Image (cartoon, rainbow, N blue to C red; front, side, top):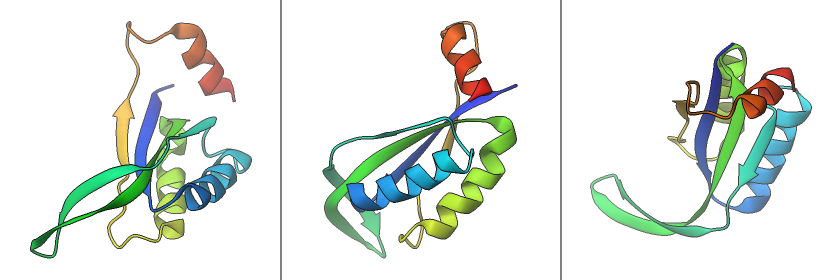
Length: 104
């Protein structure tokens, strides 16, 4: 079974935590990490914007990525939310962690 991390960003920790908790409770991912607010600079509608946001990484399996994507996109307040899937399989990954994630 393939293992993936999903990188997302959120406007604040409370929103990220609420969505992340729902994802874990619904079995869409095994674990969520939410990082403290940071400065974000981005291009939007022809200009450069700045603001604070938080990063959330969701740890899941390939079988759950589509359902997780649907949940995250529907719950997200941004017009164009980040949902980037990173494949973490391979010999460099720690096998006991991968086994735990797949069984969670």
